[in-house]
Every structure is written in structure tokens, then in C-alpha cells.
Image (cartoon, rainbow, N blue to C red; front, side, top):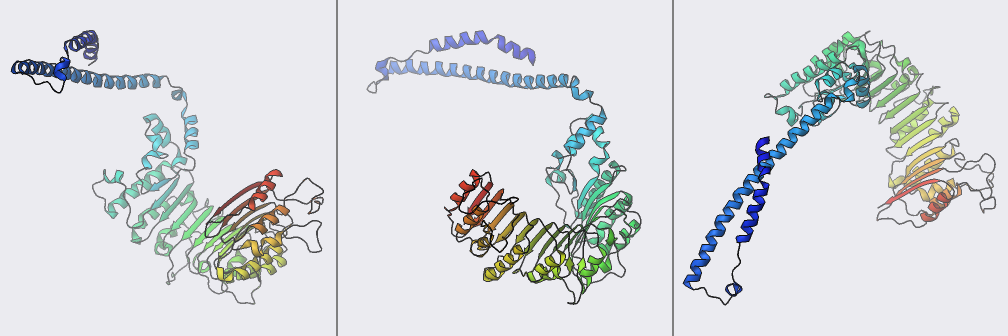
Length: 549
């Protein structure tokens, strides 16, 4: 191939000469014959036809030469690619990467794959994701990757029926039925368990449909229960009670546990006790469990972080759980019915720093009614129905807590906007310690923001949120931004001592960050906010304003 290509190139001079000769013999017809009025005689036709045949013959010859040149060019391009590949091969032998010991290369792999996880079923893009991508480079990299247990210690299995088989897997597997795909999943899980060695395991498993099909996966995982560190079970755990039972007293490293299931009216004959003795368990998440305290045995007193989502409590069960989790530092509750008798005493949670409640207004009130959190630092409230402050304020007063962060999302129910905004004002008035506020509401400029105006010198009434440093305001129905602009301008500290609002006293802090997200159909325009923006920028306050219809 190479000699042929070189030979072709050597003939280029002859080709140029030949081309020049061809061009020289292409004589044009006389101008008189090209004129539209010229009518050729029979003799002229014979001469012209002869010229046509000569041109056709020459054209065929030129086409043949072009074909040969194109073939030669294609061979040369292929040869160039081969040379480039050979060059890379030679250079790779001298690459400094070859000098990296496997220990250092392994550390690089771990950094590159940090945050990645192994999933089943795979997707079409899985082959180009970590850690599989590392295994495709060369045998040396593959050997190093296989030797790193941490790369294979986080596995997430979704074996819900039906399993979506990606096209890349479909082309390699003749039988793509649910059962055969499960067998492939078992091999995948076993491979990960083998390669992870003695590394602590993080895994999740999602099951529904044919419940007994998950038994083999759970049996494989239970054999390694001593290595469980972070476990998430999305399945009907009571259908797998016997499979999980051998893990009892064999989860010494379990730190985080999530159990989620579908609601069912049936109660298990015996409580699930696989996690009763877990000495390191600190973080617990429960989703859609009926009577969780009674049907799952857990070391409640160890739990410091609890997330409870859509669980069903019997009467008195909520406060029962709270009394047994007296070491909580973080508690999140979403969409749960709180059934307690009115005479129940509030439960003190002296270590609680973070509280998040997403619920109907009445259940938010009940949650606060039965809790006392003296050391609360961060409070998140999202009302699904109009917010009621009548139990929230007594809890804050009773606990004498001083949260610095407040995130409040109103129900956004237009029919109850006045009552809800009044509750928000009441809540803000009871939280003078708040430094960071994220408020989502309707028509905040009409009732809420005017109360936050900071006038100096102070009147007899203490100002709302005197320590406010950062504010994020989302108003989904802002009619006017004038009050918002005036209020926030009043809370921006200036260096001037002669401003109309009075001077700042020693120790007072103004706003340092403002974010406004305002909307109102149809598309709103708030020119008055330009004054606020210019004022904030002038005095070094970060400000971001967006509005939409």
C-alpha cells in the first residue's frame, strides 16, 4: 500500500504535464460558429462531431485518473491513521502514567469516581460512567480498578416489575424476560459484593410487583450485614421478614437506615426486629409505615436525625416516638396525621437544632403543641392548608428558643390570604432572633412587609426581626412592590448619620443580602424596585430581583 501510494505521488509531474497537454488541445470553436445565427453545413457537422468524440475520450481518461487519485488518497488517509495509532502506541510506552504505582493510581481513581454509584438495571450510558469507564482503558487500569473495594461498595438496585432493559444490554442477551433479567441482576450484585471486599456497604433496593423475586437479592445482602453502613429498603419489609431476620444482632456498622413501603391495612404477626440492635445507628428515615413504633423495633434513643414521611400514627404514637428519641438534633415530618389527646404533655427535645414540618395547617399546630425545643436553630415550615399560628407561638414562648434561620412557605390559598398573612406576622413577631429569612407568600407587600419596616430611632414597640441579615422573598401574587422597596431600603445600613430615617445605633445590623422573586399575572413591571436596587448596590448589599407573570 505504501509503495503504491508513493508510486502514485512520483507520477504527479507526468500527470501535471498530461493535464497541461489536455488543456492545450481544447481548442475553442470559432466565434462565428458560436453565434446563434450560425447554421452548420454537413461538412461543419462532421468536424464538430469529431471534436465531440475527442472531448468524450479525453473526459473518460480524466475520470479514470481522478478515480485512481481518489483511491490513492483513501489509502494514504488510512495509512496516516495507522501511523497515528502506531505513534500513540510508541508514546504510550514512554508515558509517565506507566510509572505510577498502583497505590497512587488507585487514589486517583477514587477521587475521579467520588460520588458515582453502581446501578441496576444499567442504562445505555452506564458503560461510559464510573467505575466502568476506568475498566475500559487498559488491562492495567482494569486490574487496579478491580482491586479497589471502595469503587464497588455503593450499589443501587431497582428490580420493580417490569425491568427496563437498555438497548445495549438487549443486544447481548437473547432472553430479556423479567426472570432472566433478574438473574443478570443477581450476578451484578454478587460481583459488586465480591469486589467490595471488606469495605462498608451503601445500598438501596426497590421492589414491588412480584415480591418473592427479591428474596435472592436480600439473601445475598444479608450475608454481608456486618458491612452495612447506609441502607435504604423500598419494599414491603413484612413480606421479607424471614429473609431479613438473620441480620438481627449482625449490623454493628449501620449508621443510616431508610425503610419505605406501600400503605397496607394488614399488620405483621410479629414486629420487624432485624435492626433492633444497631449500636451505631444515628440517622433514620421512615416512609408510609403504619404504626412504625409498634411494628419496627429500633434503638430509638440513639437516633439523632429522624425523617418521618407520610406515616400513619395511632393515637398517642407521635409523642411516644418523640419521648423515645430524646437525643434528636434534626427532625423532619411530612404529611402526617398527628392524633393526640388534648391533655398530652409537650415532649422536651433539648438537643433539637433543626425542625422541618410539611403538613396541613391544623397538623402543624398540633406538632408544635406537643413539642418543646429550647435549642432550636433552624425552622422550616410548609403549610399545605392555611397556616395557624395559635399553637406555634405558645411553643416558641414555652421553649424560649432562638432560631436564627426561618424558611416559611405559605399554603398560597387565595381565599385565606388575609388570615394566613396575619399568622405569618404573628410568627415573625415571635422570632426576633432570626438572621436568615426565606419567605414564600401571597400579597406580602400589603400586610407583611410594611410590618418589617425599620424606623430609627426606635419607637416604644420593638422592631420585627431586628437581627435580620439575609432575606429571600417569593411573592406569587405581588400587586405592588412599593412597600417592599421602602421596607428593605429602611433595613440597609448606611454610613450617613444625617439620613431621614435616623442614625444606626451601636450593635445594629442591616441587611447584607436580598433576593426577590416576584410574580403576578399578567406580566408584572415594578419600576420602583430600581430605586431599591441602586440603593442596595451603593451600600454594598448583594441583591437579586426577578419577576414573572
